[in-house]
Image: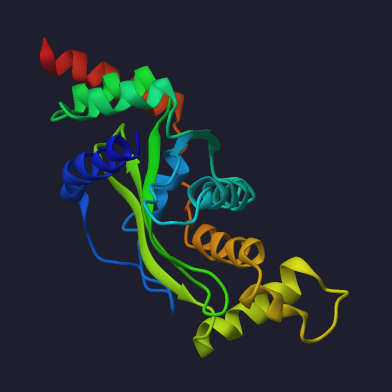
Length: 233
C-alpha cells in the first residue's frame, strides 16, 4: 500500500503544479501558499497517512497524527485522516490516475466527500542524538484543480535557528511551568519533536476570508433588470 500512496502523491502533484505561483516567505521554513483566500473556501480535507519507507516502524502514523492534531487546532477546515490501508484510499488512487479535467476532479471530490486532500511523505528521519525530520506535503484543491498549499522542509534539532524556535515553542505551547532548560526535551524526545514540527507546519496554513459581497439595493437592481428587458426587446 505504501507504493500506492507514493504513486498517489506523484499523480496528484502532476496536475496540481499547473496552479503554482510565487512562494510566501517565512523565515526558516520553505512553503508555498499562493492564494491564502483559497484556504478559507476549503471546508473539508482528507489527510492521507504520510508515506515513509525508513526503518522506524510506526513513524508515518505517529507523524500523521501529530500533524492532524496541530492542523485541527487552527480551525481552518474539517479534517479527517485516512490510513494507508484504507479501502477508500485505493479507490481515490484509482480515480486520481485518470484525472485530467475539472469534471474528473469533481467526481473524485464527490467520491471521497472532501474539497481537498493533504498528501505527503517523510523524506528523512533520524532519532536522538541528532534529531531530524524532513517532510514533503501538498494540499490539493479538488474543486479548483490546483495546489493550494505545499511545504518541503527538514527540521534539525542541532541547528541554532531551529533550536531557538523550539525554545520559544516549548515555553509557549508545552510547559510554561517547567524549568528553563526543559525545552531541550525536544532534542531527545521523538514525540515532543514531532509535536514541535507539526506546530510549525500548521502555522504556515494561513487563510484569508473572501472579500465581502457589496450590498445590493433592490430598487436599483429592479431598474437595471427593467432596462435590460427593454434593451433586449
